Length: 394
Ligand SMILES: *Cc1c(COP(=O)(O)O)cnc(C)c1O
Image (cartoon, rainbow, N blue to C red; front, side, top):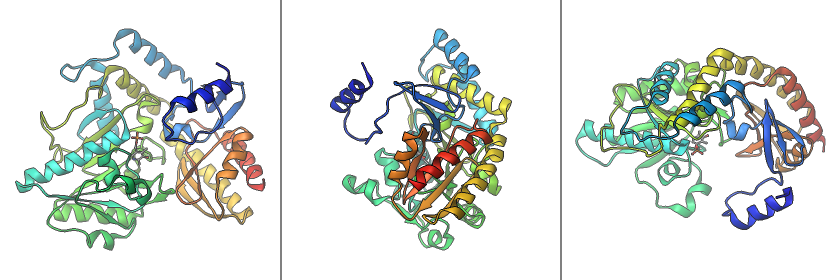
């Protein structure tokens, strides 16, 4: 199929849930992607903060090849070594104690919600519990995850969703306190809101929520799906605050591109028992071999440190753009998860950048989001900034 045929056939058969860019991506190398016409793109999107190792990473590719030849899938009714190793590594890296593997972020959120409800059911010997979530949050598209996603536009056609979800204002501890009652079982938040427009939690908010949860025996749930796995310069974003959640959701970069998600709990929150939860694919050896290779690369290549260092460089450069161009009204974020807010819609800028060979993407509220592979260098940042500046000028 030629490029045009691929796009036309795709439009004919795909359910139209995405407005795709008119580009067919074909292969990748490092931080670059190439389309079917051989055009090269500098990738500051990483398939939505997924491809932390970039493309064609030798050790990662080798690990997948070896595992593919050995064993792709077995059920959770048996042990397999890659899953055990991935579990041990992920618990070590996160400081959490128990892990459940699933296949996506939204599934990890289903798991954390069930964990919270089961914890409270055991604690109180009754049902009818409530979860507090944040406005402008994003936790996924399944009906459970959508229920805690603070976005009217995403929720509207699917109401009523799960009952007992209340929304507080992000970074406003009083608004959280006002929603707590005897039914509250958990507070869920992203330490850095990604889809919502790159908003970082304040230290006061994170430590305040931790204290509230301790005081009221409520579970603190951190959604680290986008901001975790080294992206902020910390292995997990909550480390920056010195805060340990009771439950954590991870996905996106965990598999380096293979579909895998996970939720982690401490001993106290390990409430789910046989019969409560499961997954056919979750924890299969192929996806877990990918996760192991990703976590090994993080250690060998100090990717979180690189995110901190190159992220600080990107911060300076984006800050300089903000000084230069009046249409940029705000700059937020940390490490390799940053955003620029514009006073105008950003789609024209994104399209011009794409034409010039740079992949960037929007977030809620006229924001351009920068979430490149964690292997980016300062030279890549310079190149990105120069293409972006031209795209802003038009
Ligand atoms: C992407 C994302 C999800 C959902 O993950 P999927 O793998 O798309 O289901 C949940 N929470 C956050 C913070 C995300 O960025």
